[in-house]
Picture 1: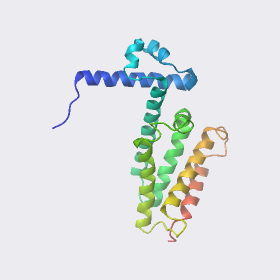
Picture 2: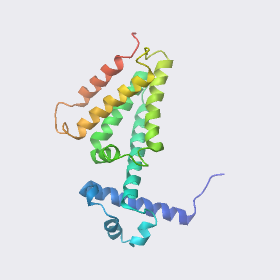
Picture 3: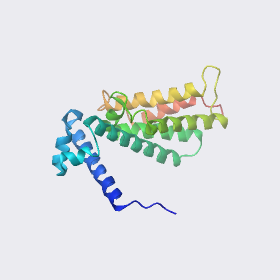
Picture 4: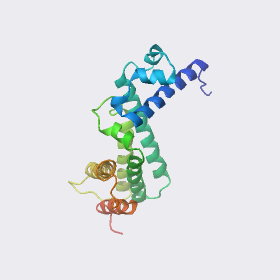
Length: 202
């Protein structure tokens, strides 16, 4: 039997999403410092009391937006990985999706990683991305495509991959944002070189 939400629950969910969408747009336009619950309630023509029923504070609202950013990143990664074949191409696809997300949504990426740890950054959405990376690395090891050593084990490979793509993503959203040299081809070449370092010789 499928679970059907009640009209009241659907209305509540829609209201909550409307608040999140309005707040996210406000952050994109004004920055986090320009966001306030009062401004969101005024824009949506909601009473402050109605908004506080969904989010008790500005920090809680920002944290919910950050959680949705992680959801969108995870979806982008999974979609790209699902269309790739083989351990090498899947790992590459996941890394490129991560970097592409940062390039396309620099403000969201900043929200996710440039603020203090919070409920959203320690929650399931963040852990999902890390487990997916570990799963790809482990699958490549188990299939004999990726090779480990005593000191360069699956944890080290996973950290190496994450540090590489995250570092490139940070550069793409900050100091190298307008640099013409950071092309997609260049980035793919870098990631392939990293993966080749722990790939078994054919």
